[in-house]
Length: 313
Image (tube, rainbow, N blue to C red; front, side, top):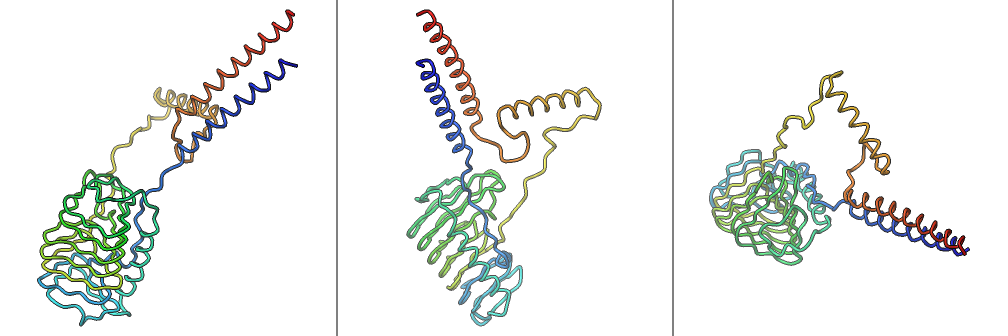
């Protein structure tokens, strides 16, 4: 009777340890939320888009389209060099672009935050939030890969002075600024990203933008600025990591046997050999299996010892 009780308690303890371990592994395997690029729709072809007016004190050069809606053509003043086309009014492409820009704005505002921006100069890819106004002066370095995305959520107004620098394979097309009020880009600033500002946008003399400036309900004011469309490239295709050997060769035979062995090991571990996202924390899984095996061995040893002791009495 005593032996059965010890055995039952030991089995329960082993099962609890295994359950806790696999739960922990499941947490590790859960992917983090990542910033995503919103669909811009018709707004994607515009370098400058505003609601009420677009005023250029000195020549402003655009790589893409210029648009106003509900503002009309008379609300566009000053010298402009437009690389694309110009659209005005509620019956034009600018109206469609405003609708799509609002959708993108809401998408950006709704993405889960990775933390407070706090004017950090080298934030990792992700969603960074400032609840109130933000005034940045200096160099903002964005380092990452082709597909990494940065979203800056600014609850009130944004004032930016200095420069944005892309590092590694990070791309201007993957940088977004969602601004709850007005945006000011200071004189001489080299700015990167698509700004969707609820209210007015002002580019002070000599400021240049690689991206887009979009005002949902306000006006756009520029002065001798250049707004170029943000470059967006795909990762260069390299040579295959594992070129396939010719059928019937020794390499093909060895490769087949290796694959079969790997599949068998994966199956024993309870991990699917194909399909699905890769599991993280594989070391934890093997630790749990090893620990469980050791526990069973100790349990078996203790049970045998108890039986021998009882038999000798």
